[in-house]
Amino acid sequence: MLHLISILALLLFIPIAFALLGARQVMYPPRPRQRQIPPGGQAVTFPARDGVTLRGWFFPVDRPKGVIIYGPGRGEGLNAFDFRYIPLFNRHGYSLLMFDA
Image 1 (spheres, helix red, strand yellow):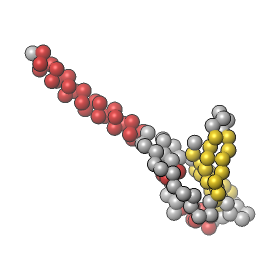
Image 2 (tube, helix red, strand yellow):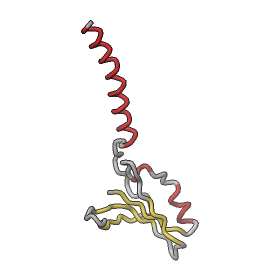
Image 3 (cartoon, one colour):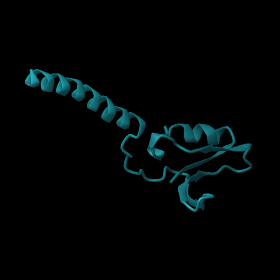
Image 4 (cartoon, helix red, strand yellow):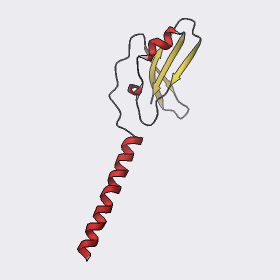
């Protein structure tokens, strides 16, 4: 009887453990390796209120209509951004600031 209870406990524990580990991977995926700055970008750094130095890339245009600020979330890095959009934003007159901690 004790052997049966042990097997049932193990069978219940395994799916719960996998669910918890899988949820962590979804919420906090591994950070990808940083890419090179795409053409037209400038490396920038600036301090956050809490003293953390934020690092990022700035893609300026002459006489911008505005600045689009992109900060990835949930543990993603700048690699989560689809870099094909940078020329689109710039072509329409918007500078782009992308940053990560």
